[in-house]
Amino acid sequence: MDREGKIYRMVDEDRAAWHAGKGSLPDYPHYENKLNQYSIGIELLAIGTKEELHKLVPHVDYESIDPVHIGYTDAQYESLKLLIDDIAKRNPTIKLDRKHIIGHDEYTDRRTDPGSLFDWSRIGF
Image (cartoon, rainbow, N blue to C red; front, side, top):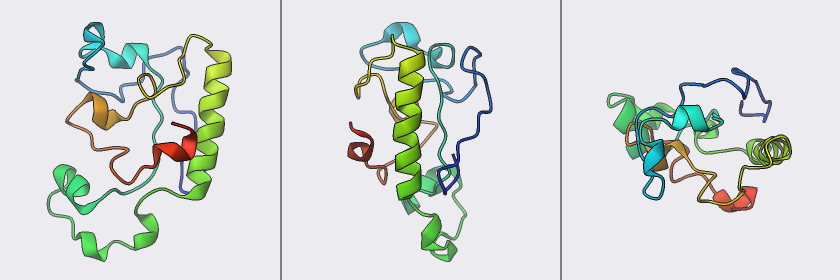
């Protein structure tokens, strides 16, 4: 999803997208290193905190980044909520709670998104 909230489908939902990487969830040991096969990945274009960015790209001059690119936009939150509702309508087995709607950073230590700047309450969680 871009900064204006436009949604792009990169992979059909019935296919595995290699977005999650290797990781685990405490209450779901059977998903260890397999979440790609059991999830629908959503990516949002944004830059997180300096610490989050430097974990992935250590030598970036964070102070030179225009603040308009940091964090998430109102349009992204609005589109994301609509997208999650639409996915849930088409996939009624998906539970709409924070145990089942998670960030990449909650599954793997190789990802930092959506990160600490993401406001889960803006999408109802």
